[in-house]
Amino acid sequence: MSEVIKTQKEPFAARAQKLNIYLLLTSLFLLAQQVSYEAYVWGFRLLSATVILQIALGNINPDWGFKKSLKKTMIILLIIFLIFIFSIFVTPYLIELGRPKRNF
Image 1: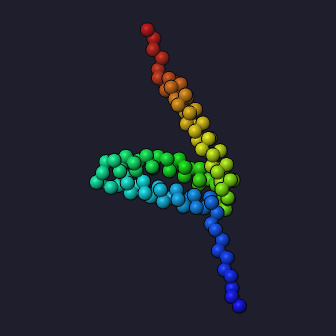
Image 2: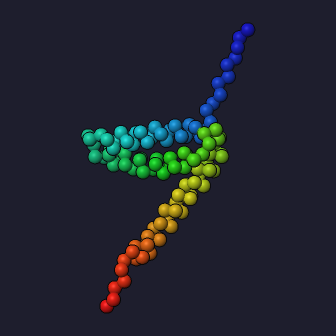
């Protein structure tokens, strides 16, 4: 009797999380190297993108498929974007709260 071994494909979310970790490691390597300034700049850009993506991908279930992973990741990225935009608008008001009033 021949046994058929069926290999199950790893879910999309788990693969996306692994890929993002590899990209994070690559960006750190590019930042650590001292040969090329251009590689350093690309490492910084890659790190900036992958850190934000890691926040989203780190909060999804690794067992999810493509559609559910994409939907949840986009929702989390939208929330991050809205918080970022909100902080840009609120920061000048918060700075003014900390300054003493001037009496002229």
